[in-house]
Image (tube, rainbow, N blue to C red; front, top):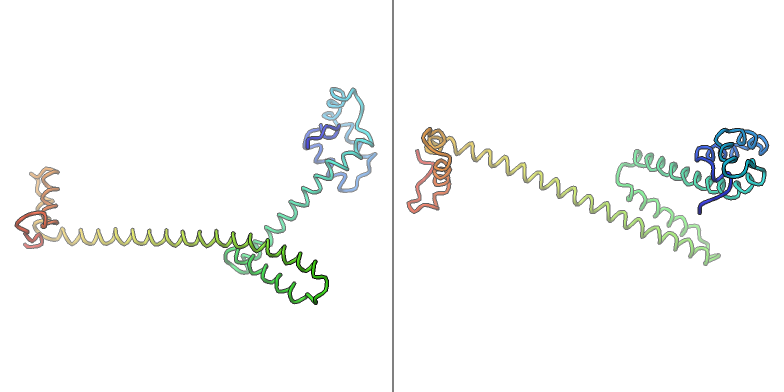
Length: 219
């Protein structure tokens, strides 16, 4: 939701600095003194609010709205950073796909809940299990995607290996062919045109296309 108060109309960098000062516990009187003295703030106050400075009431309203949203956003960023750091540490300690690590963690949570339940408060216990089941579905999808990526990687490696093997076989076969006099003479013939040279080589390499079936490897 867009905000229309005095502080909400200030530039982003100023609003961020206000939030930081509030978070650090700066008193309202000091904060307002700093804020109302800024040239950018003076200009907006004069042009949009008839010169009325940012007041205690404006600051209070901002704390309930814009500042509260900023705090929530900062907490989300902190959680994301912590998860990223944990993921990095987990990968370093136990290399592998993250979805496999998540599955292991999820299983440990299941085990802990089942071991700790003493039969009391079944509703709460069922809610916890439902939450774990929802997470299980997400982890299963992640693992399915990882396994498909692994399959594609293996298929790519196989195709590259087959291509390299085919190229190697072709080079070896060609090197063996040109050792025979008839093929070598055909390649070296200065009077042969490209078309006649291709036709002669085809006839030598594919004798089944001719009626007499000569042996191209014969001297």
